[in-house]
Length: 330
Picture 1 (cartoon, rainbow, N blue to C red):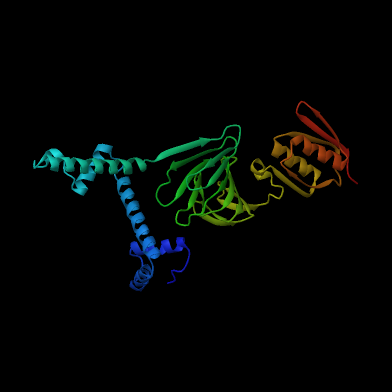
Picture 2: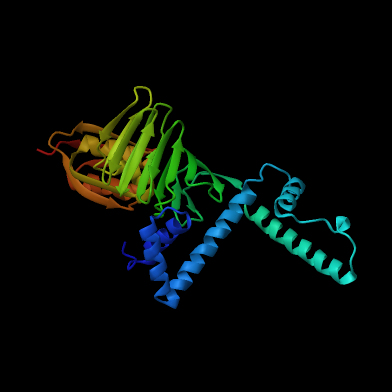
């Protein structure tokens, strides 16, 4: 076993040491490594203290759902803390110190109790994108009308959230604490990556992976999706189908970017209408008309101007409805 690595990997070995998960030989190697330097001894001691703290907090968490008074009685019983009134009188000094001990114990108990209270957070998007910074360093962007629910702080061995609607995730990598997004009865599980989730209706869930990998699960269906892939989960038929989003329209609400590569004019207009929630109609012929262009954070009117001028089409607008009229591109 090689302990000459980065701090994260060393701490993982030490954690296994204190959890009694190492062999006798491995434990001897850790102890020899600890004796080699004061810095190694310091890291060893800090890891031990941190583990004891975690166990202490887990103990106080286990008192829920007892009330505070009940939890305090359990604390006193388990740790043999006696009430002052039941202790035999000895001297004023003794009572003073006994009172101090009880006050300190009460303070410690209160800190643990209130630090481990779990708050359920619900955030709902309105008419704009909501940006959320989680305590673990992860970032979430909620599209309009979306809603997310999560406990604060995260509990147990997972970072679990519930999503309704559409959101983009940039998840901080924590290997020992997976990040799980519940979407109805389906879930998307990751360690650290970037991805989109959208549930546009009761039947379908769309997942688009930007970086890393995600595991999509629904009942007995489990599939790993890699970077650059987009899939649709059909809940009714319980199947995953790989989809293509070459234009970027599915993630346009977040990226504000559309890409066309020799895309037919009819398809370009369909994408633009969906991305900008617009009403653009074609009149005349579109034969031979295709477009290669990238729109990056462009205003809707500028997009229409580029399309019409590039293909020599006439653009008119009336009460929110736009018309592109031309004779084809032969």
